[in-house]
Amino acid sequence: MTRRPTIALALGGGAARGWAHIGVINALRERGIEADIVCGTSIGALVGAAHAAGQLAHLEEWVRRLKWQDVVGFLDVTLSKGGVIQGRKVFEQLRRHYRVERIEQLQLPFGAVATNLTNGLEVWLREGAVLDAVRASASLPGLFTPVYHNGHWLVDGGLVNPVPVSLCRAMGAELVIAVDLFAQRSIPAGSEEREERGGEDSWLASAREITARMWEGAVKQRLAGEGRDEPSIFEVVSGSIHIMQMRISRSRMAGEPPNLLITPVVEGIGLMDFHRADEAIEEGVRAVQRIDAQLPLFLRGMVS
Image 1 (cartoon, rainbow, N blue to C red):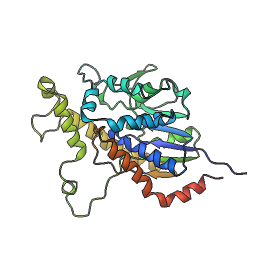
Image 2: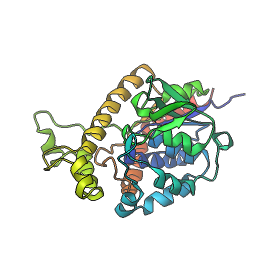
Image 3: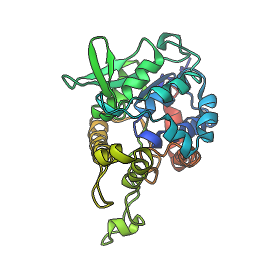
Image 4: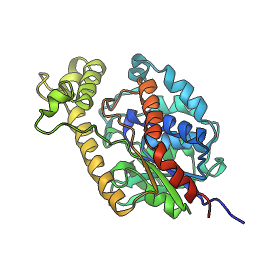
């Protein structure tokens, strides 16, 4: 007799780029590849929890309808806590799409990665309220307020484990499919990077746009630079964390390689471009299509 090895999905962080996970999951399922375990960091935890709950289609339908005005409306700004965005509004909206309250009740085993703000330790969230785990995993430091959990303040898991292959292994996975959202298009030798990318980097461009729209008057003066050449706090924090997560992701996966790596190229989608779900999801599908030649070998590994 043969049996199919336990397969896990490790869904990486990357803010709005994470809608690409939806396209990846859909494309894999079309090819007969179903996950037994789902783990996620940050936006990967959000999408992964929806998949583990059997409600990915509901999430996809909602995010495809999002407009820029909706995204701005979800951002409840605060200057009195450990971040400039509380995140309460968006998670109240998400609660309508997560009909399962606790991780233990999900259809698939699920884990989310967060970071202990006090000691920097990696925290694995495998029980308790689903949205509390997702909220903690996605608390980008300096932007979203941290989450108090079991006597500790937790922030974004991408600080320690952007693509949680290790958590998948710890939960019993024999084959791990990792989705890394930090892939970049190659730039021809001798070319100017900014010219090849059409000018201003999209990550910072998105941050500048949302800074201008969100904060006016005194708030804008406190958070944004006086001119376009001076980066705002929003740009500095988000851009710095993005660079750090990209470097950590490379290092972690070098030491903990997945069995299959999928890399949607979504560098053109900015941090807060949650209204561009159609583009991200379609690129997730294309990313799976690009590895079609590798799938026969992976599928052979599914039978042992």
